[in-house]
Structure formats: structure tokens, C-alpha cells
Length: 146
Image (cartoon, rainbow, N blue to C red):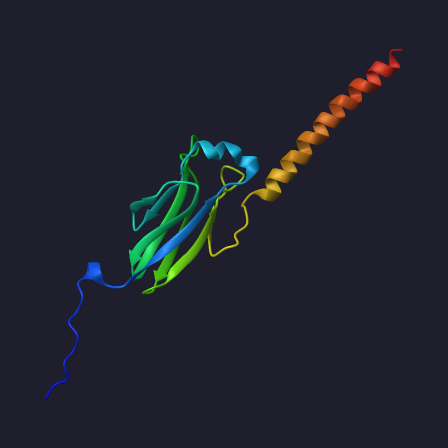
């Protein structure tokens, strides 16, 4: 009489998906290679290595947090993102650590840009300008003495 419904699957056996996150740092921030990034899913540790990490999860909504433990500040490049995972889906994400210490990290669908690149280039140009001025003044003072 009544149509028979399929039995409900327990939560742990429900079809799931995955969150695939690629964690990167810029070559000019090579010191970050000494530190392992922290990836938290709903406040629980999920991954802690540079490169691509695949985290299998049941379908649902998650809060993803990524940062790099550092000296000052203790959490460099913190970034947060709500993530919806549907059954059978792999959500591709990318995290890029900042080049400047007090910037946030970039977290989202690839491709992401490195935060702090403009500041890093300005600082590099400034340092090169100072070196050029010091070397130029040394050369000029050496030539004027002879």
C-alpha cells in the first residue's frame, strides 16, 4: 500500500566528497619553508604540509582555516573560508602565504595571487636604490681624490 522507502544510511556511511587544498609560498619568502602550515576544518587539525592535500569529508558545510605558525605574529597569513561539499564532489582550493608578515593569506578557488607582492617589490627597489647611491658615492669620492 505504502511505497517502501530505502533505509537511511548512518552519517559515517553517507556519500561524501573531498576538499583538495594546495598550499604555497613565494620563493622570496623562502623562510616559510621551515614552518609547516596549519589547516583546520571546523576547528580540528586536517593537514600540515606544503603542497596539495586531499581531505576526505562527508557532504556538508565546513569552515576552513589556514595559517602558518611564525615568530611575530604567531599566526602568519591567517585565512578563513566557508566550504560547501556535495556528494561525490572534490572542492579544489588554493592557499598562498603572504610575502609581507602582517598581510592575510589568500584562500579560495585557484588561481590566487600572493598578498604583499607590491610591498615586497617597493622594498626591493628601495634597497637597490640605497645600494646604488652608496656605491655611486663611493666611486665618485674615490675618483675625485685622484
